[in-house]
Image (cartoon, rainbow, N blue to C red; front, side, top):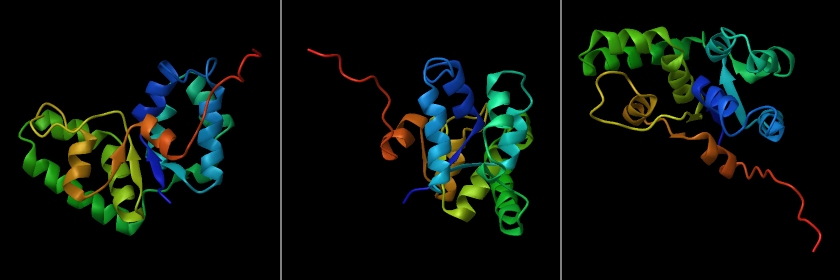
Length: 169
């Protein structure tokens, strides 16, 4: 069974576009249902990033999402993997702004947690080996052998279905 760690950008893109709370509450319910099945998680630092806002996503995180959804990232094995990731990023990205931006976000922690825990990362970024202005998560995942996918691919893998009943003929 594949287990997923959802990045903050996947939550934000879902909220702002195709899975807006008022249009597709089933998406948000599916996330929680699959967490109960031990398949979907995120990390504590993603929670911190999400709570920086002041919108319906913040209210959902505070009111509906159990604390067990967010894995603590301060475990020794995760911290050690984090150090390896940051060393690689600092060595392979020449722009200090790219490195500092990556270091300031939860990205490095979610990748380290995925590596240690055997998770697949859910993010909306794409691999770009030539990108130097920023550090895309898929580039780091690729380097460290961490699988990644988009939110849509996660939903397909989990066999989530949204829809209305067929209209009578």
